[in-house]
Image (cartoon, rainbow, N blue to C red; front, side):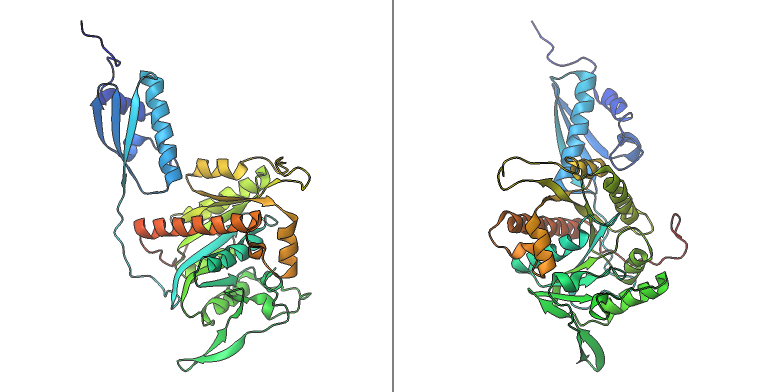
Length: 379
């Protein structure tokens, strides 16, 4: 007697009908219209799908897998076994960059946030030093023209860069501390001096910080951007080919709404800068008396949920710790408190950023600097 162990309606045609109703993440189209399902194989109650994706991250693959399993088991029952084979969409690499890359600089990381007060500069400083601790050559541009804070964080208040001769041209020698080469508008102004410039002047200043500096050989150049999505951001993507962007947010809804705008800005067709991931700062708080108890002051897993929604990596969750603030104010980034929970958090964050950049460089073409004429949605 033959026993049917799988649904009679389980066939390729009906599977395709299911996926006509399933929206592919980060798009408004279904799996079939996007032609991402390259092949369907059936072996009894086992369904094997070959799916083409352009985002190679493990988090995105897991999200696709969960969507497919849920859709098929809902239609055909829990006995269905679903397996996915991912094919990374190959993009023709065009190494001819519009505009000029920075000589000697291998990768450029833009650190951005939708709103102020989320700890973007603190993350930028600690990420830069953490990369040095991992053995990389690192530079840092404080692109927050109106509110530069890196001179304080790197204990360089009152210091000024020297002019040097490079191949017959006058260049600025970035200041260096903790192994990081750094330039900032704050090195050229008094601590209490307000910078009141219109957008074009601020953009020109940013270009001078980047191009008039002699960086030498760098593995990573971290660019700490001001909050929001304005002139400085557009000037940056016009000036240099950014390898990828990192978005900083706290878990609270008001910050997440602005962080999503930041992600979407870099994903615009006219900008097209890969988003390496989201970092959740101020994730939770613990007391010395009860270190095992976490207090989620600004909400729990907000940035984690946003990362899943947008199909990008969650690179790290940094807790609220008093010593991080104290270290920043003292001009010695918290990551230098070696073998502590805070130091380990930033080192692990740096490792994940390196992996994300390696994946991005292996699977995507070189980012071109943007030639902006009339960008829809920008003014």
